[in-house]
Image 1 (cartoon, rainbow, N blue to C red):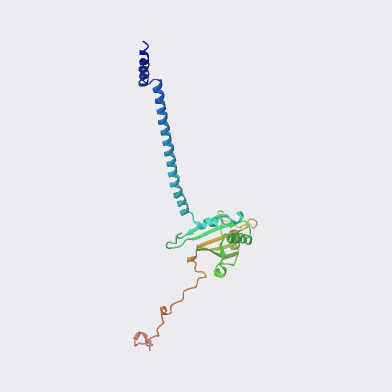
Image 2: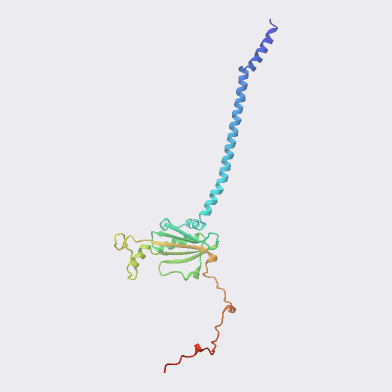
Length: 249
């Protein structure tokens, strides 16, 4: 009876392992836990790889589209260190190709200032100088200087025209006093008269173009004399059309 006990216990342990007893269940739980942990690691790795590909792929596209749609000249104008009172209601307009395809781009910005044009012009001149722009001197004498302050600048491959003048309401008030101009009429049919107390500040006009298209200050090419024609001397012939008609007798 004693000799058969180990054999019975061994057989019983083997039966418990095969039948999913306590030992077999523990090993199965460990295997299942390892499988779940491996699956979670693979899921985390796939998630990190997907996010990396998404970020690295979308960022260049985003910045590429942003740089293509946003004009760097307007961006540099936004970066000018001008006071907030001198850059109100800014409106940007442009025409032509940014890469000078067929026609180079022409940029224009109109802004309103809350202070007179003398003080506004000083603020913009100081900001342009700090940004690396240089005055072009007497190369822009053909531009309007009858009112306000006008100056032209250059930097890198661009030229800039700065014109700070009276506000638009003041211009309308002057035009209303001219009998040759037609005053603007409001919705009720009454001519609108600006209030002098409310008509303050100034208007800022900034125009930027590529230097290659700006002909001001450049020497004009000499004209080849061989390309200039000579007016021939008149030749008299016996053409009856050239003879005077006989007078009636």
